[in-house]
Image 1 (spheres, helix red, strand yellow):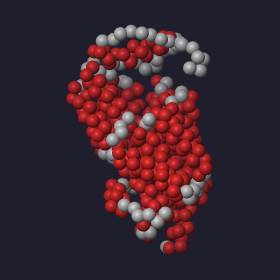
Image 2: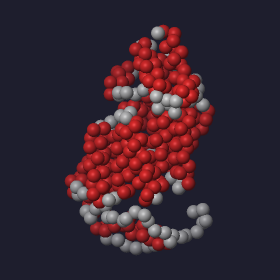
Image 3: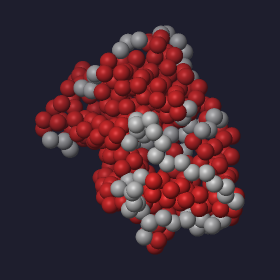
Image 4: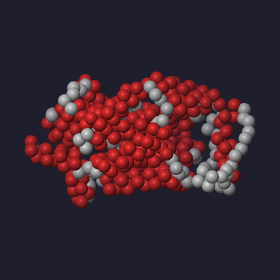
Length: 380
């Protein structure tokens, strides 16, 4: 595209029964045209064409889902694929992804560990790396950050061995998120920026969007709201072009959160309500993120003297554990229940105690941590 010339083209007719080998044929043609070789041994994922078709349809249906029925359809297609070919490991792996995003961590972990063993038997490093990263994401969702980091680092090592830069940047991104959650935003932003630059170099629009979203969220946490908004709005434009419903949902949410901190409550409500509408439509079940988005929406309503749905909020609180000092401080602001402030202060101090003194001091100077300490000093 950059040179405005054709480097490879081909035309052929394939029998539908050869579906599983089409990717390998495409890869071979491209690599020969570019005079390159692959570090990854090519393996046919399945010889069962029908099973592979169900898997591809499930993946497409879930990634482009527009309502809760689409998720159910994707689950049904995946289970059918596995029923037809129990050796179709990527179908099992993708089922694990759906379970994790629905908060069913035990089911997800069991599947990914099973898939890891199967890829190890095949000495399939690409598949192993995918499962290591997936297991790391389950641990990250459980706030078991040390374990998550170990798995991400292991996946990066394998990706480097096989030269898979595209997949490696996702592990780098998740490492950045962990450092941010631990309160080391400087190091976190280094990893997030590295992930963005890698995605930009290989022209991965989705990778760039994910990195921009999380960089924006990090800048929001440290109080640089204009910078945060610039990154988040850039991510939103990418996800609009990709028609990625889930990521579009979170872009609206993160922009709404930034606008709330800027005191632009009406604009914030507009973005957060868009996010909330998508969440309901597709049946999003990522408890921590859904709860955070809902708290901010209700805080906006409170600032604007509007009523909000306490039943929905209480149900989300009960479903979400170990969500951190930020969530509890926001709940204190919303509900004016001092037990949330106490929990927020305790968690913040525990986080700061695990950091180097200079990093801890910087953390405690950011808007929400600073507000937690100041508010606690008033009421303790």
